[in-house]
Amino acid sequence: MTMIALLYACYFLILLQPLFEIYYIGVTVSAAFHLVFALFLISFYQCTNTEPGRVPAKWGFRVGDESKRRRYCKVCQVWKPDRTHHCSECGKCVLNMDHHCPWINNCVGFYNRKFFIQLLIYAQLSLLFLFVQGTMFLVEQYITLWPYNHGTDPTPLGRSIEAIKLTSIIVMLVFVTPLLLALFPFSRLHIGFIVRNLTTIESLSPQSPEYGRYDLGPERNIQQAFGHNPMQWFCPFNTKSSRPVGDGVRWPVRCPEVDDLEMGQIPIYSHQNINDRNTYHGHQNLSPYNNSGVYHQI
Image (cartoon, rainbow, N blue to C red):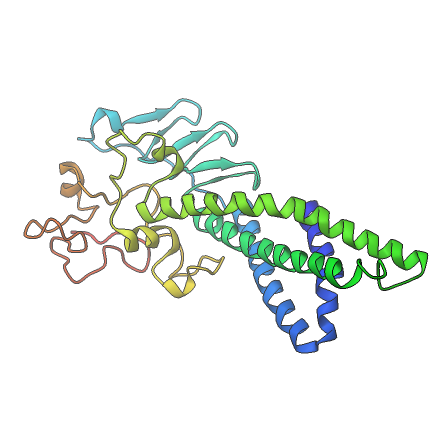
């Protein structure tokens, strides 16, 4: 948070204030930046303070489950549902665990994965403001000021202040540029995981039978993390239509197993058109999820 405060102070005091010499430009840029920055801060708070997901009390496997799915955590002393892993940093089992993030000091799991993706997006947009305006500031200093009089203020104090501003912007860009370059591929990777319904842990075992098992197509995969309403996918709050779909314990799969079908807990694909993954047996015109985030019963 200290680094965030320093970057904001540098941007606001040095880069943003001169824009208000042309009022409408200053207001427009300031409003756009502060909107993105506010969304970044809210996403950061949500990532840090949202419980990623714990195994429900007294949860256990069902009779008929394969032995490989009966995974018991000796530390937490609970049976682990599918896609649940124990985090040694947090000391607990996390539903749909993606990874433990030291930047937010929390695990990324079922209930805060959406906020983590939003955090990456809004962090990049905020840094982009700093990078673009910082670069423009340096170009302006080099082209219009320094070749002629080494600054606009001829007094020693004025030159010192300008030197401090220039040094601050250079240091800011040295920090912002590599961070921006690192966040872009990192964000692209994690958005790709969302679209394919994978986690970082699952992606490390591409030969595993679990790999790609939960891929229901891009639209439904995104809905599982971001909710039903696309208009609220970028909103860092959990409303009725923008919270994760499901409970993080039971998961619909591409190739359902017999015991799951008998329990009626997951959607299945039509036998008449097995290649059409958007058609469900007995529910051709229905979404596989209802608004409460609970799967339809077959």
